[in-house]
Image (cartoon, rainbow, N blue to C red):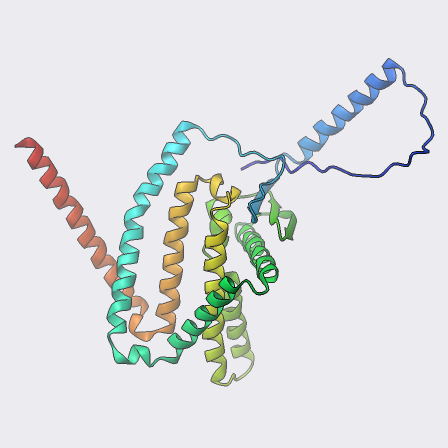
Length: 307
């Protein structure tokens, strides 16, 4: 997604008693204009391979930037891919709610400390989000996590980061490589929750941690998973360039599916009745039921139209 970096404009102040300059000749003006044109061309050639991954937060689009228009074939392909992924979204959501409802009917599920500390963390972050307390701090923390996730994704694909920035108005990363995972990863990777898990694992390898640290970890994951979800939902309607890069419809479908899988993985890790094996088996069974129902519907439509 080769994009031209935002034009830098230098602002300065002038004094009223500046000396009057000598009037330039036409040849001097033409020579200076030609030199400026060459400088602009050289700058563009030097930055042609750079790409920007941006997050526009408070409804502020990147000034001076427009997305390159996508062709009709590319737009149709993105819509087709989004439509093909919709059944996977349905199967995953169906499996998740079935597994969760089955586990919730068992008494031992409600007695698990892991679930309750996770739920307490979610409730605390939700209340904090809607109360508006420390809003600027959490907004900056979200933008920082958003851009760091871009950077980690770029490094994972062996890309190079040449510049990045974070502010309350948004953030950006300048890189020589981008793809659909790099562009969308901040929308389904709860970075701060993941860092807490990694830190807990590293400390566990170096020291013998007391049992209370497990409870703190579940609360941390719940708190920052809710933080990720709430701020992501708040940011998506604000015209994100990351979503337009690969088509907004396809991007939203991928974000929903990936977040559903992340939540399912978190609950499977925290709640033993929701194990990964059981979830996978139920997902395959629901996929088979969905396929069977779709084929039955197609046959009914076909024979009904024939008669």
